[in-house]
Length: 158
Image 1 (cartoon, rainbow, N blue to C red):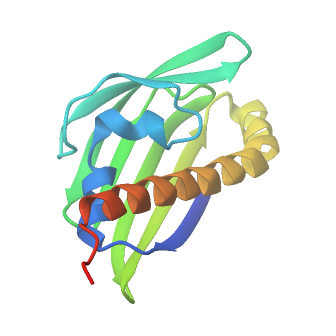
Image 2: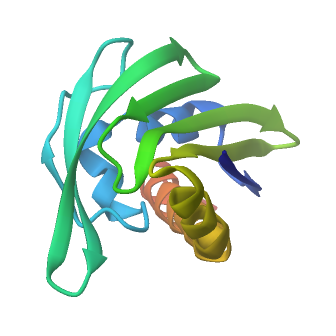
């Protein structure tokens, strides 16, 4: 089993972080390894499905279908896909918790390799890249949600 977790404090209220995390149509804007959301089920909720296009290597792309299997607003959601290449199953858990004047956002990825020992060896080789991509996803998310929150709040007049 491949498990990777990244967490970051983002200077926005939990509601702002949750709002962006729950918009399945926007994942390509910040998720590393997602080129497009080809079909969005709308706002995340238990049972909602959406489809992504994910680059693999060069011109090859995978199409993955995701299902929201757990949805506990405004703190936790879990999405799963049986379509991630070389994985028997794959899950993404996103969590938001208040921290100081902002929010701690956590992305946890869990993948069960396919192809027995060969798949397990491939997962070990890919672990470093998956960790980097997960951290980049979190950084991209933080940058986007902070920019949007700043635009949504009117500047204070002096």
